[in-house]
Length: 413
Image (cartoon, rainbow, N blue to C red; front, side, top):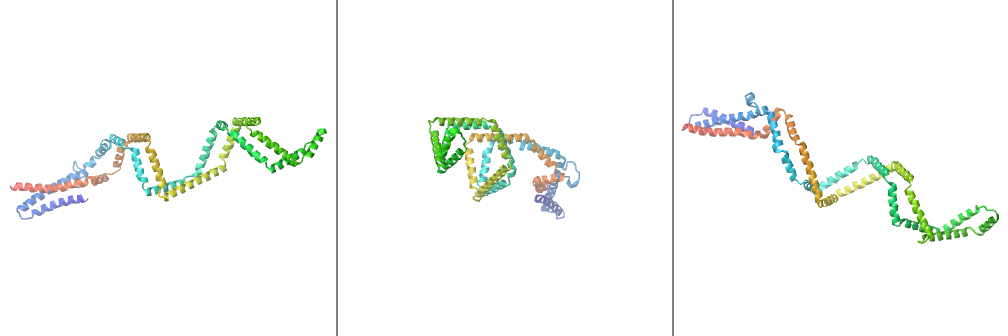
């Protein structure tokens, strides 16, 4: 607006100067000034007409070949679109530029500058804590239960059990388990209370036996001779002796019981009915209310721990977050082939996006220009280039004034 006012003032000065010289006494200076002001007035009016004719009809008169921009609005829009698509932002230039950019390095640099700021790290941790607090844990529990149920259904229990049992037997874990059990039984059988319990049980059971004849008399004599303490001591000794036999490595009883344990174990492993019933039990249990409550409680506990860790690191300025980022960057920087692969993938994706959407540049320009009415379009162009055009008017008036002075001098000569 200042340049437009200046152009109008220059034209007004030329007009006033010309009018003033008409009423001044004739002398050389007045003649020179009148010639200069006259030429400046003509030049200013001519340039005003030319500049105004670009945007609108001068003085509102429909003079031919004026308001050129509005009359050629479609040509102007198409020219802008063509310039944007084929010259300023053509596909080849964009693609060539993208090929020169190292995407991963650029992104890493931006992230490094971001993570190096303490305030940014604190804000990130605060946002992360808020996201963790807003996680719908209750809605996640059914998905966890469904995933666990699907895993149980597809799990080959027999194959896994067979593999585990074979590995355990190859490592001698079944023999170690037998020795552990025998050691526990031996410790239990050596207790005084165990001897008393065995004696009491034996005495009660012998009293229940009913035999007739000589066998009965002999049996009753034996029972009458043996009291509960004697029976308990005898049974305790027999039990401990048997345990010692089982614990000896060359004992045939030991080999037999180990063989029976292994046979029973593999029978259990290959029992499909038991596998199915075990899966049914697990599936029914995983969908139960107790499991739902347990999972919900565990997820809440994990969330509280995560929020506490994030808050602790936020108070500390995000040092752990930065250390984690630095560790990740150092690890990734060693994987040159991985970085190169991602560079190519990102670049290919961007180039493909440019190929598929380049035409949208023209559409966007056209939509924006079509949405503007004539007055808005003219105002926009005047704001962008009007300042320089108004200086044409100023220069026209000044140049006309100078040329008028020269021509007047030539006329005098």
